Every structure is written in C-alpha cells, then in structure tokens.
Amino acid sequence: MRKLVAIVVLGAMLIAASPLTAHAHPAALALAAFAAFTTLVALPLAVAAAYPPYYAYPASVYAPAPPAYYSAPPPPVSYAPAAPAIQREVVYPHGRHVLYGDGVRTPYQWAWIPNPPAPPPDPGAIPPPPTGTPPPPPR
Image 1 (tube, one colour):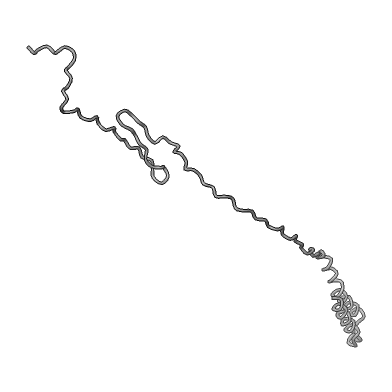
Image 2 (cartoon, one colour; image 1 turned 90 degrees about the vertical axis):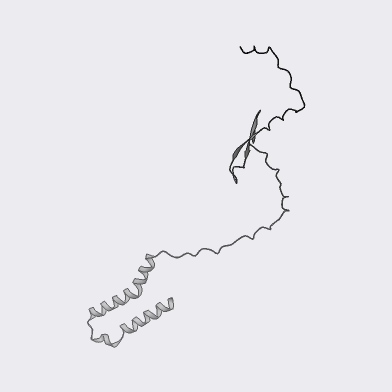
C-alpha cells in the first residue's frame, strides 16, 4: 500500500513539474497543487478516520473431546399385564349384566345374560298335597 501511494505521489509531482505549466497563472498552479494534495492525501485520511479499525478475532481453540466410556445396556424390562380397573360383571338373582369391549379398539357394550330356568319337575314324582283347608263347594 505504501509503494502504491509513493508511486501516485511521484506521478503527481512529475505532472506538476511538467513544462505545460509555464504558461499558467500562479493562482491556477496553486489551485492544481491543492487539488492534487486533497485527492492523494487528505481524502484517504478522511476515509480512514470515518471507519473504525478492523480487529480480527483470535483463532478458535477447541479442547479435545473426552474419551467415551460405554457401559452394558440395561436388561430388558417386562411388565405384568394390568389388572382390569373396571367391574365387568353385575350379578342379580335372575341374571347378570356383562361388559364387553375395552373402550379403545372396541367400544364398551353391556349385555344382559339371564340365568337358565329351573329344571322341570321329575315326571314320576307325585306332587305334594295342598296345604290348608279346601275351598267350599260351589252352590
């Protein structure tokens, strides 16, 4: 960068010292010298003052990863089936209600199941005689 600035300043001096300036007015020469000075020196200084300097971050340093220790996997876990949490049967003397379904895959459904009838009496058995007084005869 310094070499480039030195070359540009040297070129500006050579142009300023050229014989073409022999016919120019001294005020014009001063104005040209001021313009060359401003362009070559003052403008880069103003730009450099307007922007803050750039500071590079230091290189990142990472610690090595700790060694990995592996243990044996835990033994498989088996669970006992869950006991039914709801009452599935309601019993009455003449029958019972039974709950079907699990409420998730199949809906709940109550079903009535009557008790079987009593067996018929033995055909060879004599019925017992009636108890109490017989009714009066019809008149």
